[in-house]
Structures are given as structure tokens and as C-alpha cells.
Length: 157
Image 1 (cartoon, helix red, strand yellow):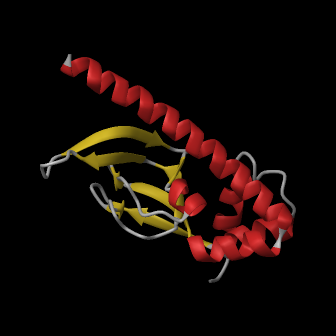
Image 2 (cartoon, rainbow, N blue to C red; image 1 turned 180 degrees about the horizontal axis):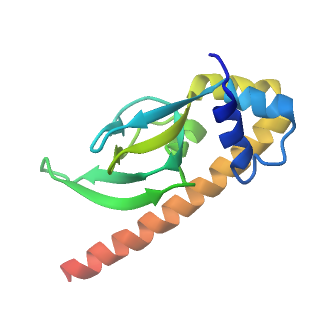
């Protein structure tokens, strides 16, 4: 995968990656690619086995889940520029349990899960930075989803 300066600049701008040396940034960049997505484009879908993680450079991404027994989806989380998503599957290797869909044109940094895991295994500095940042993102997203679920349950009462 070729590394362009836009990708490395974006990685350097991410809190937690901003203090990494050039080799560490290059290792993450070599596993990453910029992707422009149109409105209503699925970045991943429920039950997918991908380990890829994403960072929103610009735009909005909706995290949705299917309501059991129907084909209707409920939006649980709205993420904006500067947010990570898809990190749980990277962290634990599980299938996706929700879908991620662009709301409006968005630019995301896609981090190939297999390549990024290899970079983490070859460098403890990269591994520590990636797992720490992804752990923080997973905790934040889980907390926000819990609040949204509480609100949805309150509406049903």
C-alpha cells in the first residue's frame, strides 16, 4: 500500500498518535487508506467479519442496529469528524454487531485490520498507541450507545 502525505498528516493529527515518531506513523499509514464515501454508503454491515477500523476525517457516520424480528434499523450513535468506529471487531476479532453508514458525503481513514495488527505486533510503540486509542474509542462509543439505549427504553415506557 503506498503512503501519501495526506494520510500521514491525518494520522499525526489524531490524539494519541500525535506524539509517535515518523517510523511509527509510517507503520500505521501503511495499513491505512483514505476513502471518500457518498451519503447512505455502508462502511460495514452487521455480521460482517472484517477487522478494519475507521477514523472520520470529515462528515458524519451513523451506527445502526437491526430491530429483532424486522428489517427496520435503529440509529444508536451519530459520530462526527475526529471519531473512531469499528474498533471493537479489531480489538476482539468478533463479527460486527451493528452497521456503519455515512450520512452525507464523508471522508474516512480506513485502517486495514490485518495489516494494522501486523504493525502492532512488529512494534510495541505502535501496538501500545493503537490499542490505547482504540480502547478509549470503544469505551466512549459504548458509553454513548448505553445512554441512547436508556433513552429508547424510556420512550417505550
